[in-house]
Amino acid sequence: MTNQSWASDDFKPTESSKGNYTKLKEWDTKLRILTSPIKGWEYFNKENKPVRSETEIKDPTDIKEKWQVKQFWAMWVYNYDEKKLQVWEITQNSLKKQLRDLTGDEDFGSPTQYDIKVNRSWKDLETTYMIKALSKNEFKEKDILKDSKQLNLRLLYTGWNPFEEIWTIKAIEGWDE
Image 1 (tube, rainbow, N blue to C red):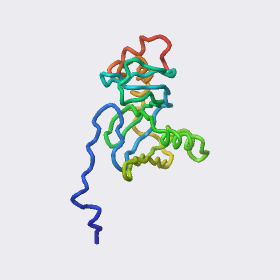
Image 2: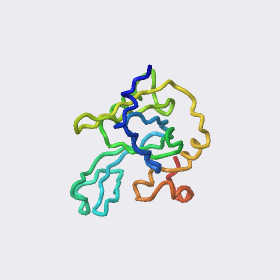
Image 3: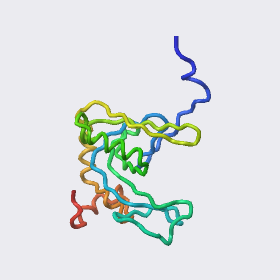
Image 4: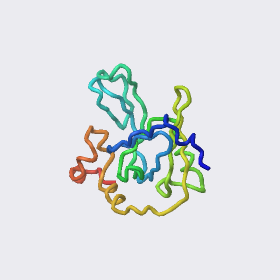
């Protein structure tokens, strides 16, 4: 006998992101982190465009009123649900702490060595995130891994789109990782 409450009519899966940036779905999103994060500061300007910097941004003049300056981590990930390479940008302190804790755990270490599931849920008006590390395994998408090494997230600091500037990266002196 199946539990019909799992298949109730009021449950509607959220749309997938289909973009180049990871949007965590309701419930679980399975990811493989491919690179160490870059870290910086960001805000959204009056045109609702992100402005990022490697150093702290103080008193921006073109900030959109409802946004504030936040610290971010950005890293290349493989999103298993979307079956594609994406940028995962994290501003939530709870996610950063969980990733830092996993990295420091001798049973897990670098999250580039195993898959993770990120659970996004909420109660009342508060969103919570929980990262679950899956068993260590070799990443099988070798072409994706090769692509992530050709791309450079540091382009985010310049306002360039790292997906559109794949071949420009090599021309920028000193940005090879």
